[in-house]
Length: 234
Image (cartoon, rainbow, N blue to C red; front, side):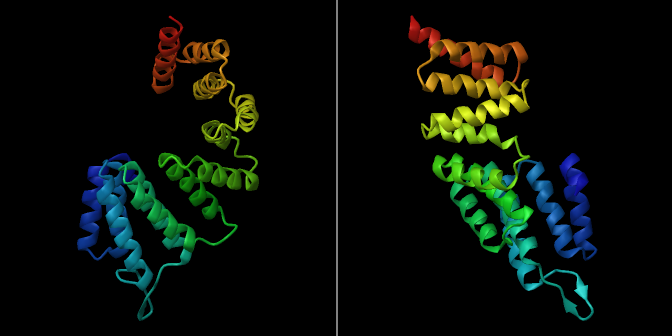
């Protein structure tokens, strides 16, 4: 699996060799992950969903005595979660939603895996434009994991999209306190100030992005926003 991430083509080849040697479900799982890291997202998602179907009934699973083992609910939920993320990366949002729904139906409640699946559900919902659902899922995870200050940036973004500017500002201020040098934080601050009509504060925040980092997607977005408000002003 490590090779599948670091060198996907080699990982896929090793997984195929393993399958010929009777590697079964574990070997097919490695192949699917290799396809994911190679950017073949839809194919990876299909393989992962098929894998979950087989794991459920024990097809290709390791033997325990004279019987094939079957996957636990957590194993199935995590496999559907991986499929959902592959569909999301492949811009197949309806199929991502269906797969994450399968994961949510199976995952044990109050588990760390449930938190991970709900977080992934939030990103899928946001990609579909359902910021209310995204915010609900992120709030759910954050309430149970107050140390996850990294979530506050996404909470702020979802709240801003819903025009819940008070929550957005509170969450964003907490995030900036925890990560004072993250350009993404100041890009979002500029977006928030722009949404509330404070163009001066927005400009200041976007310039802060460029003072932290002059290259990368945050810097590109900040420049585009600065150009936009300059054109609007003129």
